[in-house]
Amino acid sequence: MTTQDTRLPILAVVGRPNVGKSTLVNRIIGRREAVVQDVPGVTRDRVFYDADWNGRSFQLVDTGGWDPDAKGLGGSIAAQAEIAVGLADAVLFVVDATVGITDSDEAVVRILRRSDKPVLLAANKVDDLRQEGEAASLWQLGLGEPYPVSGLHGRGSGDLLDAILAALPETPEIDDVEPSGLRRIALVGRPNVGKSSLLNKLAGSDRVVVDSVAGTTVDPVDEVVTLGGQDWLLIDTAGIRKRVKEASGFEYYASLRTSGAIDRAEVCVLVLDGGQKVSEQDIRILQQTREAGRALVVAINKWDLVDEDRRSFLERELEQELVQVQWAPRINITARTGWHVDRLVPALEKALEGWETRIGTGALNTFLGRLVAEHPHPVRGGKQPRIVYATQPSTAPPTFVLFTSGKLDAAYERYIERRLREEFGFVGTPIVLQQRVRE
Ligand code: GDP
Ligand code: GDP
Image (tube, rainbow, N blue to C red):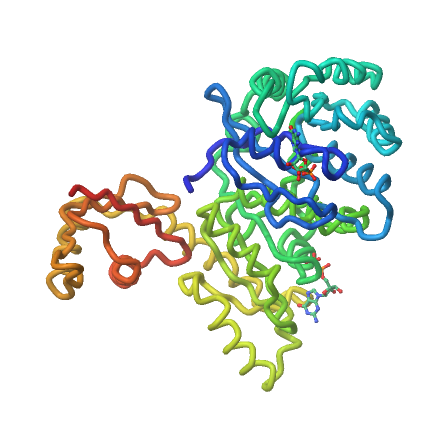
């Protein structure tokens, strides 16, 4: 994935289970990526999707993944709607036209009407002309024109997308909304690992709350914090601070915000709880930072709880679980007391330096020539793929294009990556290798 220099507008998709939200999301993003579930209430891992239409990009959030357990269906969709309204620039409310309006739809409608966000109403499952009459009855919801669509067949989706784009704000340039020149950091990690404690230690009392980027999303609050004599922009600190945790469904809400914060950041600090086992949720957040191509620092917090016994376990565990990001600088800290928190800045600087490292084409090809001479690609089916030429077209994260005479093995790619790191550093950054095979 490439770096996103601009923040994309967000469209949240809301509606009862089984009205066809995932199907419609798949239709809009143009691939079968969202999980279509016949079982209502199954939590979906991925909720953010990138979408394009007519040359404009936006992000889609499928709020249907959230299941606030036993609160009952009506309550749950209402809560979804509240999340959506808080998070998005516009809301797509999906109703099953073949079923019509239900009580829980009406609860949602009240929330949507109260909000000042644009709302688009999709009357889904209008698979043919005959059913359009049913869609028309949805005018009475008072949410404006219902767009008859068939998520399944695509019918009407072009008109709906046109309306969506008209409702979403133009993509703002980051430079327009954020003080330029400051490095952007996101503190990420599952709840209770100590992000707020770390934030408070870092920010101290002389922080500057930057603003709630007017009229866009989520009232994200960024703070300018002076660390190591330099100003840094801490992204979406509102998402880290307590009051968000107290909101209902905060875990889901937090995961949405995490995705958003990662997208906007240049470098992420993954905070782990040293007193606890590395969990699936930790790994998922780690993956998100990698997929987004962000620089990464791993902070093992609550080091005060790590005694001798725990320590040897922890080291082994980290070695296994963090194998994919061995390149990330690691610091052990105690946010509560501030112990070693001063090690964060050098780690961040190192990671950003790696993230922005560019190797000249000459040096790169000399290096690869040497590498291949020392350790040629194994012969596969009588052929030996050769690296003809390589360039590094971009940084942040460093991305290499290898022109080859045949597809390189995954193992050989890993070898190249390892050698690139040995030779050039690239501390704290993922490396992207792309192959262009010329037969
Ligand atoms: P979600 O729970 O709202 O995300 O709904 P899904 O996308 O999982 O869809 C629920 C069911 O409705 C699935 O069986 C879909 O195949 C079906 N469905 C979705 N969209 C349409 C549509 O436009 N027409 C028809 N006939 N069925 C649809
Ligand atoms: P967040 O949900 O990631 O923002 O985590 P918090 O900062 O709210 O911390 C969760 C809990 O862990 C609180 O009770 C903190 O006091 C505690 N905590 C945070 N940092 C440390 C630490 O360094 N050591 C210990 N022992 N506890 C900590």
